[in-house]
Length: 136
Image: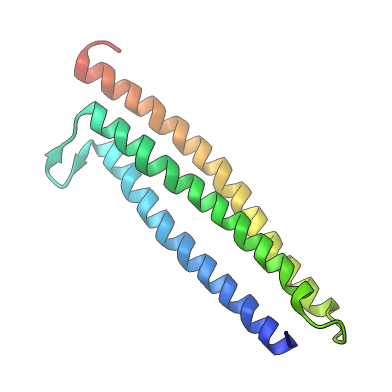
């Protein structure tokens, strides 16, 4: 792989990752809002349905975002090793590892925030279950 191709690959990886994360966060936030409001449109949802949305939609989307960030980081970190040995790849390696570092930091920050948000949603779902059923 030539230097120009490697730089192009780096830019494409960064763009693809940021686009995927933006779409994922939009979906995660929609699910969170459904859980917090208890409604889809004007339809009110049962506590069991809200729990199902949390367990089968919100959590997998959150974990998928974290895992995707880690995988993109790994892919970007490997780009310098795809360049032929005849090229001095130090500059490219620095750029790739900085971008890979972004993915690692973004994954850790996402994990921390999703844990906080997950705890908040769990507490909310427990309150909703008590309010609707009068018991747990």
